[in-house]
Every structure is written in structure tokens, then in C-alpha cells.
Image: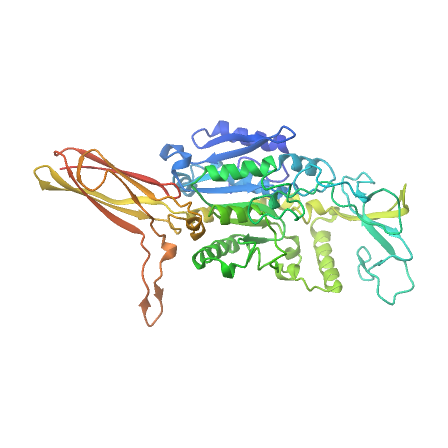
Length: 555
């Protein structure tokens, strides 16, 4: 895929901003950059809209929304969003991309948490969404880069009562001490860091300093007791800005929110089983998932069913759930990058809740073998260190941030290209209004019958989803006839909806064809009075499906 910039490293806020400014300045006929507001640390929350403005404004076409970095550490997602934007603008003259830009609008919020991502990229720290303290400070081992190598790893402490031992087959890894194991070297295991508070009989890892989770802060089945949920829905300026943006853009019908990792595509609903979902919406989600699997090799998993949730144990307040359940947008979460699958561990095995400790250790061995072969620098051997509080310890293990959570930089472009290929297929599902036929038939004495045939050329219906209908957010098709005195019919009228070809119900077998076609088109007639040579103009518009216009001259 042709791009302007390279995708072999992770862009910080300054570089991300510079790329967006570059695109807005070099492609003013296609792109508009604006800030959705400032973060508490003064960074802009950037949004960019992209389309071919020579054939319609941003709000005049059906739209796809792309975002990334809901979670501070999932920086692969922001790079995937930048990559798709780059491909569209750099390749705007290529026939296939030009066709997409004429038909659709693309909206991007590449980095929802710029404050958090800066901490993640420029310090050894891990954090969920943003570096704002949530909850009270608790005691324990606080994560810290003691050996100053830029990574916070594992710390093993020799302890005759420890519950861990080096694995015999792969001594770099630790296994659980066996129930009858009396002799040997044993360890207590903690994250690399310093002890806060008194050293007591129990040593524990301190909870995360920054626990806010933007993906639990949306007003969809929000639960205040859920970790990271915030004080109330949308109490973070970043999530409020995203919600306001999506609400303001009625033309957004499909959406990809980029996260990491795991190599899967997740589809709402998250608070309940998809068996309870409207069958048509479920069918459409499965069609989107099939595209993702073809382009990325990632399976589609329902957020509730795929993660073995219960009525009380599910992820509440998620952004993709809010987009679908409250706005009727077909939103999916792309969990980019999956080292474990590359190591031979299937997604199903990764998510198996009944894995034994031996099976978990075997997965670690496969993962480490892949790392040895492809990015050996990510693993640090166990190295002695004199801890000022705990005495002699050893530091070692994996650079989790850029092996498991995000892909090693050498694999970044490949991951971005997969995500872009999928997104550029997903957008093609959107409904597209068109005027198939518009003609005038003289009836004599300046009376004329004007006939129009309006069609939806997209896979999705003009109402987008049953969920959007249920939320009463689907807007009708507006029809306007101008240029002549109307004798019969209306100058302004509404058409409730047109189905997409995805709703066709015909079935085909060797023995028969049965079922019925979808209602993709509708014919409308007017009687007008106008002399020969008069030009009559027809405009049709739908917030979710774009607009079209046509003219005819009365003979």
C-alpha cells in the first residue's frame, strides 16, 4: 500500500500532530483537521474528516468512523488509524481509492488518549487509559524500572517458602512449585519495583496508580462499581468528546475502534448474548466479521459470548457497545496483533478459561520460542540486583509493551496494512442513495408526468441497523422536486426507507429458487405544469445514506 510516511515505529504526540497537519495542508480538497478540545495536560484531541469534496461535503455522504488509543498503551491502534488515513490521501488519485472517496466520508480520531500515550511511549510505565490518579493510594510493590534499562519486567526474590521455581525444560520461565516439592531453589515473584509501606508478612503487587478505563466510561449499561468506570458516564473529557463527535455525525453507519491485542474482531452486544440480538443485525455483524477474517485472519467473537460472560460479569460502559446499542452504528473492536497465534497458540486456546497451569506454562514456552526467533532483544536474562528494601533479587523477563501488547516495530506496517484492507472493505457496506431514472413525459397543454426511481445501492438499508430504528435515530429519505408548478404530488416529501441488497431473502438451490427480493428501489410520480424547455430538478437526501440529484428537461 502506498503511503507518505513510514510505519516502522510508534509516533509520539508531536509526530502524530505533524503528520495530521501535513495531510490537512497538502490535501485541502480532501481533508479537514480540527481539535475536539484540549486534554487536561493541554494536548489537542485531533479529529480528521476525509472525502472528495469536489463531489459532496463531509456530511453529504455515508461515513465510516475509525479511532484508536482508547487505551494509552495500545499504540498500534493509533498507527493503524493513521495508516488508513495516509493510504486514502496519498493514493487519492488511484482508481479504487478515488471511487471510495467520491462515495464515502471517513472520520478519524487516531489517538483518544494523547496524555496517556505520551506516558506509555516515553516512560517504562504501563497504564490503562490516562495518567490521572483514580482511587486511593495503596501499599505494595510499585512498578519501577530499577535497572534503568527502560523496561519494567519481573523480579524474583529467593525465598525458601516461595511458590515458584525455575522450569527444568526452560529455566528462564517460572513454574508453580509442586505440592510435594521440598528441595530446591524457590522464589517469590513480584513486578520490578519498590515497596511502598511497611514490609509485612505478605508481599503484594500494588494496584495500578492510574486505573481509569475510558472503555468503561460510556453511558451504556454503565456500572459505577466496575474498575476504571469513573465517577459517572463521560466524566472524562476525552470520552465526552468522542461521544459528542459521533452524535454530531448522523452519517456514520459503520465503525472500527482499534485496540490491542489478541488477534480478534469483537462485536457488540457486550452486556448480553447475541442470541438476544435482532437477527438482521446479527447477520450483518457476521458479514462484517467474515470480511475481517478474510483480510486479517482474525476470528469474529461476540463480546459477551466469546469471553464467557455472565449476567453480572461483563464489560459495561464500553465504547463499541455505546456506539451500537445507543447510536445504532455497526461498531467493531479490532484487537490488533497476536504474537501467540504466530507462536502456534489459537485464539480459542488463549481464551480457554479452564487452562491448567501446565498448559499455561506450555503457552509461555511457545511464546518465548517465537520471541527467541524473531525479536530476541525483547527478553532479558535473569540478572542479579541489590534491592534496597528486599536484598538480593534478580530482574529479568519480557518487554511486554512491544512484544505482547503491541507488535515489535518490524511488524507494525504489516499489521497496519491488514487493518486498512479490512476497513476499506467494511465501508463498502454503507447504503448509497442514487437516482436510477428521472424522466418527463408530456401529456399535452403543458401538463407533464415526471417519474423518478430512487434506489439504494448499498448492502445496508438506509436505516443502517434495527438498533438504530429501535432508538428512533434513523432519519427518512427527504425528496424535493423543483423547477415546475406541481399539480399532483408534493414538492417536499419523505420516504421511510429503502432496504439494501443484504436484506434480499431469495434462496437458491438446485431444486428451486424461492423467497423474495429486497425493496431496494421505489418509483415516485408527479404531475407538473410547465412549458417545453423547462428544467426540473430532483434532490434526494438521507442522513445515513448520502444524497443524489438529477435534472431533466421537458421536451
